[in-house]
Length: 109
Image (cartoon, rainbow, N blue to C red; front, top):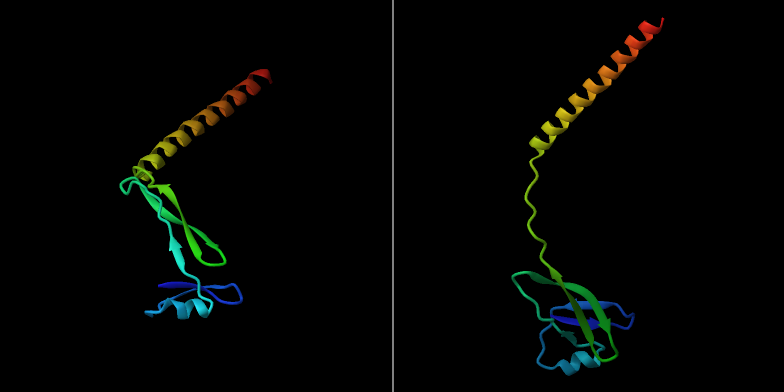
């Protein structure tokens, strides 16, 4: 793969095999450089961080990212059941509050 720059400053990636890179350079193509940082493959990965276009080459930048830890899947059925129980408790408390007010009103009358 070659990465090149044409006169409109658009960057192109082409598959072009030639034994003479001088021809490509004369046509305005720029060589591509990749400087891969060191990282721990078991806990990290490389992410593309853009590129820098210079007069004589293009440099691809990378950043090191941590692989996210696996999150244990949620038990949605259990969470739903817990919420139903909370709703039932709140309904009972609201119902008791209404009954208490009704009793007070009857006594006061």
